Image 1 (cartoon, rainbow, N blue to C red):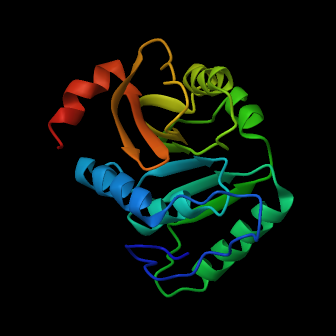
Image 2 (spheres, rainbow, N blue to C red):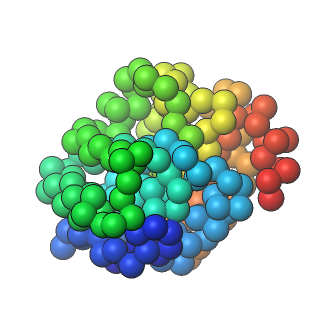
Length: 200
């Protein structure tokens, strides 16, 4: 697996032999084409929950993001993200304005803690077995505790066979697409959706 586009294009991602389900390049390209069109990645603070290989968060950093927090409960997987970020920091495209932090913690625990300031983009890519009820609670916690703010775009990946998630109060699912076995939901604050339409 490699970074698809941007300042770190072509950089290889350290990938564990088992235990993660990386987003396919087709799905990743579709997600980032949309986020690029909306202009939400430039100078963005990015949160990558259930980070796995860190592919989504690192792709966002490559395409104009400024700060990445990758949250992964598996210590071996988190260690590989740290390894990839160390490689990025040796890349000539890394600048002093960029920041990346790996947090070894359950996504649910991270989401339930108060955030210092909202993120611009939040990726959520839980295991397919992650229940819809738990997913809805996670979304509600992000909104309630300040990690997701007025201008935040939440990108949620689930099995296409899973039940449709429920957006927190005051939020809505503004679009959803299926890519084979994967369903991708875009969730935004209700007041932002009229402004978002102008970027498309």
